[in-house]
Amino acid sequence: MKKFAIAASNIQMTYKSGSASFVALKDIDLSVPLGGIQLLMGPSGSGKTTLLSILAGILTPTSGVVHLLGQDITKMSSGNLSKFRLENVGFIFQGFNLFPALTAAENIEVALSLKGIRGRKARQESLDLLTKVGLAIKADTLPRNLSGGQKQRIAIARALAGSPQLIMADEPTAALDSHNGQIIIELLCELAKQRGTTVVIVTHDPRIKVFADYITHMEDGLITNTPPI
Ligand SMILES: Nc1ncnc2c1ncn2[C@@H]1O[C@H](COP(=O)(O)OP(=O)(O)OP(=O)(O)O)[C@@H](O)[C@H]1O
Image 1 (cartoon, rainbow, N blue to C red):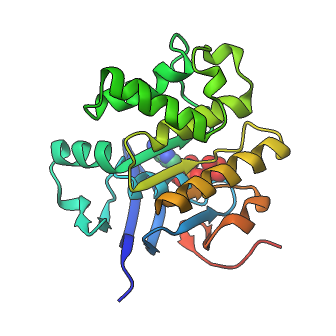
Image 2: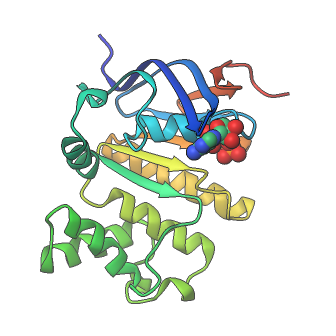
């Protein structure tokens, strides 16, 4: 039997604000096998980020069940869910989200520190990760002195810190030019494959498709699996 890293079923999400409500996800079923690279594509407002946030355990669905690594995260207490997320999920965002006052290495060390890895061990792991993303030479550089592509490499290294089994990336190439975007995705997918990490990427970028194992198209809160024309 195929083992799934992510298994979400009957996911519905309604955003409420005052008396108004908006149904962002209607009835989503999505499973991603262990080690798979899954893309979520679709027009703006189709619900991709909402689904990614639910799959990552950041947002609780209005109804439905999400299993991550065999555990039902929709039944976890918020404390257990935070711990589970910290141990098992790495995040990459469009805007890099690096701490501006910390160097490249320190940005990774902070992530390791949250996972209980500190001091020399953290320094060593952060340097190993920077080497993997080709930026060991920038270990002591502040984000403001890095290019967009370099910042996103640091963000990839940080997401890999502590070897989480899942990585969730929300439009990781949106702030990059197409050449750098492609390099970043290639790097992320290569490192994920080496480690058997399962990756979910929200993207508008059709060039990323070649790196994916699975592509899911969304429209109006539903999975359509109809490729855009
Ligand atoms: N916190 C919120 N409160 C109310 N409505 C929301 C909230 N977050 C998202 N929405 C709405 O839910 C729908 C889906 O949003 P979502 O961000 O998931 O789409 P998306 O496919 O990721 O879009 P984009 O590609 O533009 O990022 C949109 O219509 C959006 O306006």
